[in-house]
Each structure stands twice: as C-alpha cells, then as structure tokens.
Length: 391
Figure (cartoon, rainbow, N blue to C red):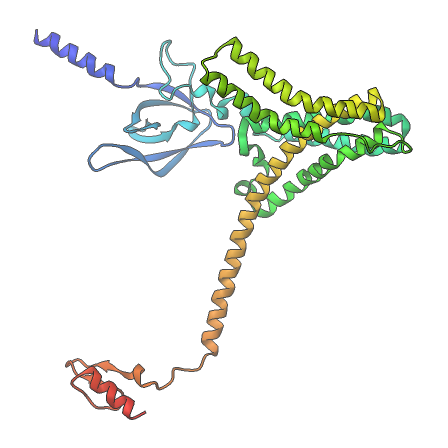
C-alpha cells in the first residue's frame, strides 16, 4: 500500500512539472552564435534569471533543454560538461529529432520570425539587391523613355511594374522584420559612417520614388496636352482612411455579436467602399483629362506610387531617427569634451587663491582655532573676528 501511494505521489509531481529533455537546434537569422549565461538565483529560491555571459555556441548545434527557469518561462537551462547554464528561447528551434508527442516547452518556436525562411531571406543582402535593381531599372527606363519615343512605350509598362515589385518587397520585408528590415544600415553593425554610406542609395531611391509621379505623367501625355486635371488626391485620402475605417468596422461588428461570414462581408465591403470612392473619383478625372488608356495607367501607377511612398517614408524615418540619435550622442560627447577643456583652461588662467582671511581659518589638534596670524583662539568665531579685524 505504501509503495502504491508513493508511486501515485511521484506521478502527480511529475505531471505538474514541464516536459524535460527536449532537443533544440541553435538557430537565428542574424547571429552566427547563441550566447550562454550563468544562472542567477534569488536568495529565497523563488525565481531564476540569466547572469553574465559565459560562452557562445555556434548556430546549428543541438542542445538538450533540461528545464525552464523558475518564474522566467522565456529562459531555459541546458547542461554543458556537467554544469548547468541558461539560454534564451529566442535562439532555440524545436528539433525534428524529438520523439513523437514531445511538446515544445516554449510554445511553438518554429513559428517565430527568426527561424522562418522569410526572416532568414530578408536578413541577407539578396532581397535588397533585388529592390535596388528594380529601382535602377525604373530610373533608367524613365529617363530614356522621356527622350526616346520607342522606349517610352516600353517604359510606360516597365516603370510601374518595377516600382510595384520594389514596393511589394519593401512592404514584405517590413511586415516580416519590422524595423529590423533596415538592418543593412544599422549603426550597431556598421557604425555611424558605415550606416550613412549605406543610407545614401536608399535616400536617392526615395527621392526618385517621390518624384516619379511627375516623370510618369510626362511619359503618358504629349507636351502640348493640358494635364492640370490629373487627380491623385482623392485616392490618396481614401488610402489613408480606408485602414482605420476597416478596423473600426471589424470592432463594431464584433461588439454587436456578428461573427463569421457576416463580419467578413461587412469588413471587406467597408475597405472596398472607403478605398473605391476616392480611387473612382481619381480614375474618372484622369480619363477625362488624358483619355481612357492613359488615365487608367496613370491611376494604377498612382496606387503604386502612394503605397511605395508610404513604405519608403517609414523606412527613412526609422533610419534617420537612429542616425539622429547617434549624432546627438556624438554632439553630446563633443560638447562634454569642449566644456571640460574650457574649465581646465579657465582654471589655469585664473589667479592664484587670494589671502582671503576665511581660507586660513582652521582647527588645531588641541581643539583651538587659528586664522593665519600665528595665534590660537578658543572658538572659531574669535579666530574669524581677529582675522577680519586684521584685513
């Protein structure tokens, strides 16, 4: 009976503990190694956290997770040479070598961006080289098309396709990595000047993208035609307001208790109407101004232009904020150096301390006071009085 009760207790305790001995592969899209840390424990043993870094393990190596740290489920403990160390879950990918039915202690690490093929793809220079190539092709065809009528017909199609492709990849990168999509000009990796040099082509492409609407107008119309009636503002306003209106429609329908097909129809209809009204106004005006085909092409190009401009401006803001922050740090350092140097110079140029009577007041070892006249006084006030009297 005692053995049975003991077995039941052990089974209950083991059932309350998280799964142990899961295999994980060290993996990340930006790093080539994963840090391993000491494990620090609270004095009362209530929680554990990571301490100082001990070593780095190369990407691709397999480790065995023994347990999760107490009160820190994003951290795990592994054993190296018989000693326990801590790691973060960020660089751990659940291995296929785990027995069937083994659960991922950190949820689902395979769904994390830094382990996905998209995250790894946009952590290389390849997609950004493709984006740069598309912008370069668009620029070449636009400028040559403005000077050559034969190339102009090709440029009318090639320029928006290239800009659409570049914009799509920019958007895809930003959705996948967020602000990390601009890692290629990160000061942490390349320093201030390295980041500035990498940002220059990006700024050139942004300027081209913002000015491309005017160049595309010239591709579509003859110089003798009046293009004052071309419209882009209504569509731009619709693109700005369609997203918040769609989100509002989704929230309202959910609060009203509508789910499934009804909610989806209302949400999609809100998006199409809020965007379609402005786009339709612009399309009609553009067709009246430069004809059906040219007006349609210009309107479609305007959609690409607005989307690309929004994404590019977001990227520019992210980069500038990082660079400006670094510039402020550098300026603060320069100011501190100049301020210190100025104080040192002033101290050197300042006259030697005067024979001010207060600077000579002091207490002797026997408790009496002196004021510089060679005499001793019972109290400090007496020493000050006679020093002031002899000034």
